[in-house]
Image (tube, rainbow, N blue to C red; front, top):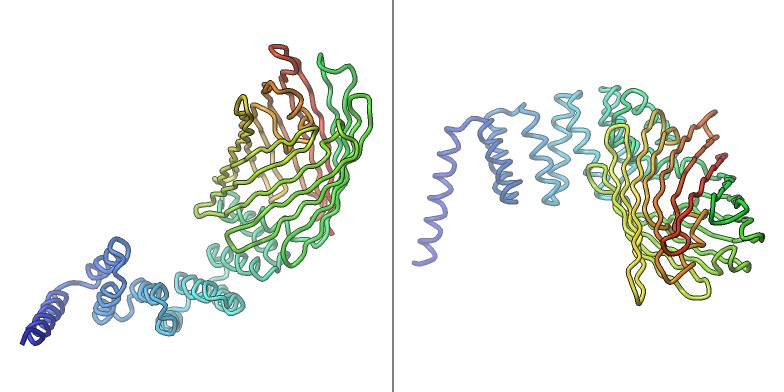
Length: 413
């Protein structure tokens, strides 16, 4: 008898629910369904409300696509495909249907099919920025870097303030050519600290592999009236669509000109709304070991990229801290920008002065400003120029200025 009462009560509530919804419009039902889905995470109730709304307005495209998304989130993929196909057949220029359908296949590891769906959408909506961006994202997942870069460059040319395209362009550019060679030269002048200027030259070769890029580098330095060589390997393994890692190892027999050993690791996350997050460490071996921890937060906004970074180096006496704020203004593609950097403290990633990180038990103070310009030409060539001035403490309460001029060239092929 108790079970019978429960069934009766359930049927009564369902009947009341249906009777109430009959009096509602498709729009009000759609609003209620979205509230159930987003506020309460009650997808079954949202599906029921969406179906009732579609019974009232079968050609209401927004509701049908929303129902397809609800099925996607509920792992009812065949039902979702039916809804997306229905709306595409009836309204072949409805952009959101292709976006939702393409993402369904992408999220379920069928990127090839996702590209086919987006291509169908572009046949009917050839100038859709959202579909072009989605196609570039899918092609990136397939490691078709050059095709993805062509699309991204088209988007940026038409809309230079497209933040999501700008964020993706930087990642694509790093992988768009299988090989690259680069050379950089830095001239560093000191007004007080050292009588002779420093000269730094680095030559590197990078190769794009199926797991990410690998770069070999040879660094030469003339400083402290001596010459030295350092050998490094960088790797950027791609872990997923969200995560990428950075690995570095280096060795030099010329201790004092370079640290004897160096190593580094960072984990990068590409977050929604064009944010980037990084956390990792750096290791330098001079006469003693130095461990430095780093974290950074980046953000693309219109034509700008902002990055705030810190390096933290604990010791028995104090915690050494350095901070930097770097900004780029893009006036073209991923390689075309003006840059401004502000920093306080020493960075282990800067070849020009990382040798000073372990120069003293006392944590030296440093403040600097860097201006940069980078421009690509003839597609695969990149030239760069930078100038910086640093007010560097080299003894306790004794400071001097150092001026750095740097030139760089990259050839991709």
